[in-house]
Length: 395
Image (cartoon, rainbow, N blue to C red; front, side, top):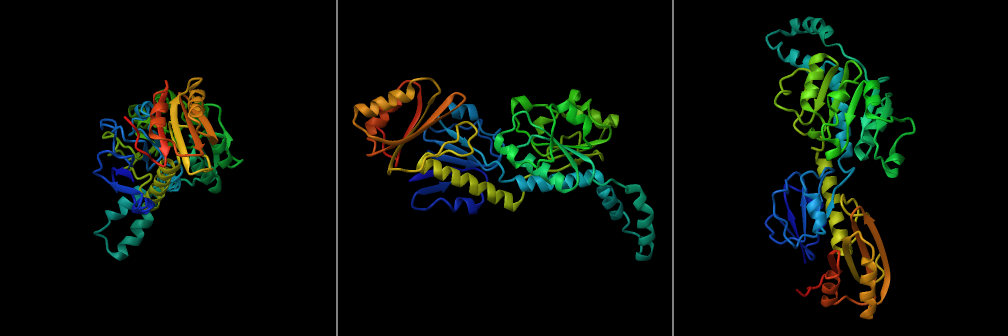
């Protein structure tokens, strides 16, 4: 039986996919086979040797020690696209709030509580000129990061009658297929900043994107542009953003990650990390995360991992071994030689690599013995090995 440890509140619609016959799911499991979490920070938590996989019910994995997991052969999953619609809709609302005087107008109306109904109508008519805004149709939207969420936002902009330009130096072929042909690709960040009325950020929080939006980038900003950050707080240099607001170059800043210096400013629209905070998004993330764990634990297949290659093999026999190794020459050959020496017949196999890690799925005619698994683990550069179905491995 596989044991799954949960952190945070994971939607039951996802956890229900773990069958009671094959899985025990609880928050207090000490030696889990896998971990599923949302925002809980794992960096300071010990990772038991029993852990084979970690699933983040969300896109970002900055709360997971990915490098440490790779060294231990732990597969880290995320759920790209599961919350894309939720973020897209919030970006739309933020653009509208940046464009129209809705917030100021609402606050003004709330201050008219002492007026009679007869006095209210002329007072409202008089006030509306102070809250005049702009329409977003015909304006230029810049999308930085064209993954699942960024692509959704970009396509939404086209549907709204906006001109849309995008920048993503690491765009994948799969992501490119999701984009409308009307979206123009920009060659660099600064040229996008100079052209757009609205700029929205959808890149992951990694070392390369830390303070991506800094004073140098903001110096190229189109006058009176609006900036939206519903990705991660680390992507923007808060001091530089405030300076751009103070100078008047930046008209509005809408963010899911406000700092103390921002929350009282009228030109900042602060939100309490609402991007993926919908019941639908939480359900989608939980379902995807749980299903990815199930397929990995039961079949060794990997989809949507941030540190292992995508790999899948249809079962040809009931017996399978998987192993991860440092991506150096000769390891797979040594494993196959070991199988041949023991007269273990291979019926099918697949091998893929990603950066410093290689991963292998091998179907066997007969079940692997415990001492065979131990012998494979002793081969130089092998990080982790499993037999499926699970067996007790000799120490």
